[in-house]
Image (cartoon, rainbow, N blue to C red; front, side, top):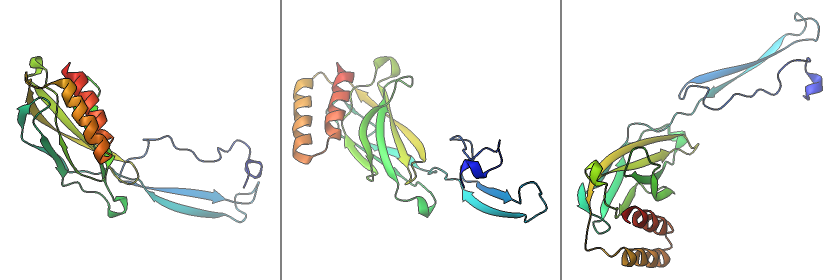
Length: 193
């Protein structure tokens, strides 16, 4: 029906602001109708139950090794044990890091179905004990998200040539077609300078 067919003043169509309904809950919408002017004539209703999507839960992130040297140690990062409704699969994963909790995360791997990542990292800040926080954001097929973190310690390396590092990452990106390697190289080099 068009708005003209609905009693004046009735909010139509129904709009619910995002993040209003509780994830994992079931909400029942009911439309009641009757003959205009007399609620006792031809009363009818229809209901629709909607399950509100909940984000994945229960997962964790690991790194091997937990310590290393800037721009040279390769960290194998993985996430596992995420649970979600089977209708919400497949899950996808995005990896990032922070050298400070107050700074925005810098992307290591954009969203993909791979739950693993091999990467080098810049040195952590000396004022933070050289600790870097690795962040994994997990998405379900409806884009509900959850995240998990772990920390690694990355020491500065006086022997790494940042220019050569960037060149090798760009060459690797070109040969593999992995654009994330360029983003990694820029973020890691910028954080290292």
